[in-house]
Each structure stands twice: as C-alpha cells, then as structure tokens.
Image 1 (cartoon, rainbow, N blue to C red):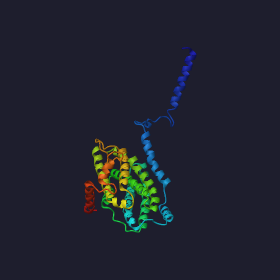
Image 2: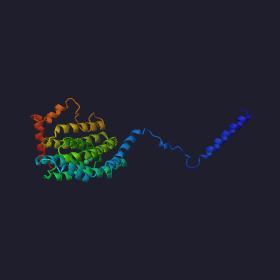
Image 3: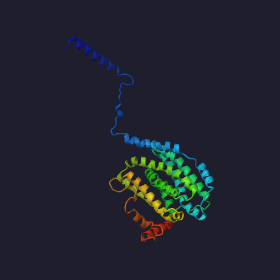
Image 4: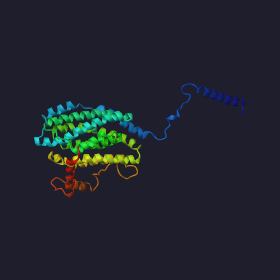
Length: 340
Ligand SMILES: [Fe+2]
Ligand SMILES: [Fe+2]
C-alpha cells in the first residue's frame, strides 16, 4: 500500500470512528427500535381495525332525525293508510321490532361500557344512538296505528330476556350483533319490499341501513374473541346462540298469518333471513374441532331448500302437511305453556 493510500484509509477510518462516537449520544443513539418489528403481517388486522373504526364515522355521517322523518312521512301521505283490520295484523311485527330495538339499545350501551377494544367500543357507542332512534320511531309508528299494542310473543320475550340477562359479552355480541341484527335487517327489508303502508315503507330503509352497521360490529369483532376461546367454550356458546335463534324463529312461525293478511309472503322472509344468516355463519367458520357451523342455517341456493321450506311453511293455498301441522301445534302449545 502506498503512503498516500494509507493516509486516505486512515482518514476514512478515523472519520468513521469519530462519527460513530458522535452518534452514540443524542436522541437517535439507539435508532432503530427493534420493537417495531412484527412476527406476523399487520395488513389484515389493520384492515379489520380501520373498518371497525369506520362504523362510528359512518354513524355520524348517516344519522337521521327520527321525529322529523316521521312527521314528514305522515304529512306526505296524509297519515297512516291502512284499513283497521290490517292495522291489527301489522301491530304484531311492529311491536316485536320495537321491543327488539329497546333490547338492542340496552345491549349496545352495555357493549359500549364493557368491551375492551377501543374501536369496538366506539362502534357500540354509535349504535346506542341508532337503537334509541329506532325505538322512538317505531314506538311513534305503533301509536299512530291506533290499535291496542299486542302482548310481546312468548318466544321472542324469552330469547330477548336471555340475551339481556347474560353477562357473557361473547354471547351478547353473537346473539345480538349477528343473529338478532342480521334477522332484523331481513325483516325490515321484507316489510319495506312488501309496501304494506306508505309511511312505514318510507321509514324502514333508514332503519335497515343502520342495522347493517350493527351486524358489522359483530362480524369484525367477534372472530378475534372466538379465537381466544377453548373449543369447549365455543361449543357451549354455539348451543346458547342456537337456542336464542330457535326462539326468534318460533315467533316468526307464529306471525305467518299476520304477514299473509298484510299481503307479505312469509316464505320470502324465511328465505331472506336464511340467506343472511347462512352468509354470516360462513364468515365465522366452524366450531373448533368440528365440521359444524356456530348456528344452523339453511342455504336458500341449495336444490332442496324450497321443498324443505314447504314442509314447515306450505305455499299459500296449499294444505299444511303432517310436519307443518305438528310444528305449528308444538309452537302454539309452547307459547301457552312456557313461563314468560
Ligand atoms: Fe335497531
Ligand atoms: Fe341494530
């Protein structure tokens, strides 16, 4: 090595050494922080989190004023346009939905208080405002029908009370946010599409749109919680959810005549609700260690669906078969015999 090359090398090295000592002090002395490294990619979890956070923002964006909307619809159509007999039939599903909104209001307030995840709490907090508005709007509508409010159906009352009384947040999230909110969304769409009464037809799409956000909270947050449970706990949860689903389903069987008297075909409601619940169940996957979904659903796209549906709910005008008669007798007997 020539003398000039050695001098250059010495200069380079001494400069580096000086710089290295200089960077050992100051705020960047330990940069980079290896705690920023990940063991798993964050992209998927981040997408879920930001979608969960968006529920709160979308609630503010889409908020509507219940009393104003109700008054405007009443003025536009000159009040409720429905004959007295049909008003009585309509009061059954409307009062059920109204009490369901009250239950959803109470449950979402509890979720807002008790969920650990801040984004899930934000979503639940925004839902409290939605459910309060839904309850007040449906209560106004029921009062405007000017018929006596029917007693809440036994099965629905038992299912809602089970949901309200549990301290288990997983059961609350599952049975309310997925099962009840998903079914409610299908019922609101079904009643709106049937165009039973113009004031109601104007109001329902607003409620239905809100319910879609509420299902979103369940779909985005529940899988993280289910992943932390033991298979045994998942099975117990699935059984509780299935029971609440059966209770809500029994009420819909008892309302078949009310829907038909209003010109709305209940087979379409069952088809729409099954489609919604089938899609939601498939998003949650199977109970760990089994090939069973978390709750039983029938897939309306399966070739047997229509035939199986007819066994329980015959087509209009068709005489009920043995199974349909037995199911109906059992459901009606239970409604009289069960303590509620
Ligand atoms: Fe609601
Ligand atoms: Fe809701």
